[in-house]
Length: 308
Image (cartoon, rainbow, N blue to C red; front, side, top):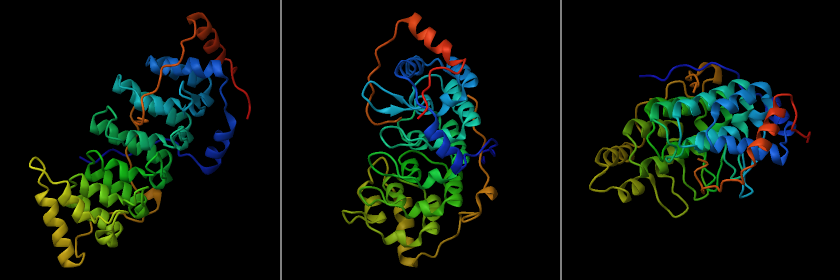
């Protein structure tokens, strides 16, 4: 079943530039908001954002001195998926530029959501991935995290539907040509993770030469598919497809409908109402309840920020 088409604002370059300079949380406010995130009080956070929208893009500093945002925290939480998805949609509706803010590890929200350890059902996850893409289309070609991978690399570490793969490549086919820190293209990740021949052909249509491209340590897609084959995942179908493509010199069907189309002509699903995935973060020192309540109460009247 095709994923539904999204609605909602799209972040412009001007929005992203302005919001990245606009908000800076005072330390006490940052601690208080972060505590609410860790306690999964998403309804309270939504109310704060509604009264003070700049919170949606304001960075917070965790106890390990790594910056994060409300959007990153909603994605990395392990709690109620519906509430977390609702907050993601709400944040994107208030400030689509939140999709363009990296955390302290250099990851956009889409990099975090695309990872295997994100605790969401695949349908919800894919709809939110495309909601983030809708808000910030160029994010597909942004390298992030310690591995310098783009979202197309990362989604292939987990299950990815043919529909999601097609839409991502239709909007940004050049993502298939990007290498990560180890010289891996998305096709290298895909073939090492038992992708289907259908998705293999989508990647090959976007970048036909990738069939013979090697990683920094000299591995081709076929070599990776062979090296990761196991008794449980023998990769027979994928291996046959790769061998056929090599023999036929890349003569294959063209499944990426809409590749190269303008962004407005590519259909995407709506965000849902409602991890960083690197290292576990320490819980910040809790503020006394009365102090935290007083600080957060002031946010609804526009307080708690210093201009940058």
